[in-house]
Image 1: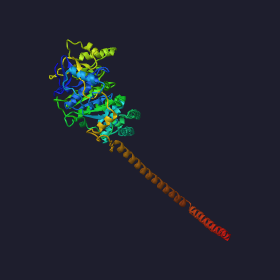
Image 2: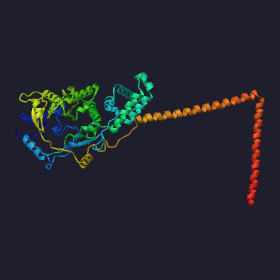
Image 3: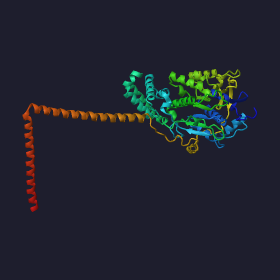
Image 4: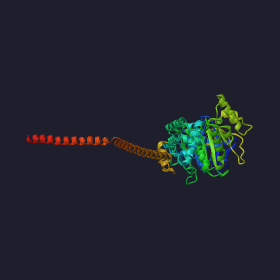
Length: 512
């Protein structure tokens, strides 16, 4: 085969198949791709090798580290590692003359802030469609959610965190009668149902995701001083216990990239490559409106210079409307034990450009670990005929980092200190509370005024009654005067008697 060099400038070497190198052209890498295969067949190694290639070519990468293995991208492989001999043998088999261990510039991220820099967004940036998906709302509840966001826009309320969102929902319930003529009914029962879903999200740690400082997308597009693209590694092991939060977060991230990045057409190399591991979670139980949104984002984000690569066990997990846009395909082995797995093999075979000498359906079940069926886009945009390919070995560590290694690398991150301290500025929660406090104070003042007016009116009424009695019965005033006189006289007598008694007793005690 001759010597093969990995970094040839305009392509990423993937492996060898059909007697020739299989390489991904950088100017076709934004046309998206699929990496599929059963557990243990080599998907993670393939993904790691691609990430290394993109980084070396100056392309930033985002990967979700579901098992913790991809953190090894930050460290070079080691001759003392258990897989060293197998990796070196594979490199020699492929004729890789420049194979050597190497690290990659990495930034660690974590929605919960434990294994990397926290990633936050605001409720407003998330928007009602994705928030409804995140909360698992039905159509009626989603309608109320849209009303809430509309009300926030009209009243200039900033929705930054879940506390703001809770305050907004309460505000909608309290003003439901005013909202009904403009938007329709907002029932307390529906608001209560949304609040219960919100509590579940908070229990899963979702509140850590909302707030400020919000993520600056530019921090995903960094290169180091030598021109290598940073690999943003998202710690997703804990996040996977909340699969809906995981899927919604990644879809939000794609949407933000789509909104923020300018149109570039088909660049010489992507501005960012995005690997979406456990891709089936994105489409499970998703309503049609959300699936349409996903399809649209995937279709249009290519022109922003972003390549999206779905990583999944089963290729039929990705809907046909999205799968048809994935031009670069790497298919590892699949099993054929169940009818669903047989359908997956048939579907996978049909997506490749035929290669007459190769029975694709049979080959999928025969592939060894580290071997895959590969079809990549050519310069003219057409896919290459599928080839059975030996995948190149990675240069970085195969496996996780220690806590100490992660801590050291995090401390030298280019975004160290930028996101680690949350910021709580005035937003909807504070504004609505201030309004409620002002309304309570105004209500108390008004009550005091009304009470004073009632007391004054009662006093005036009593005075008027007395005056009427005096005029109607002249002796009434005389009787009142006599009673007052007798009362004053009794008080005087009692006072004099008391003085006499105190004088007598005082004299007795002084005598003793």
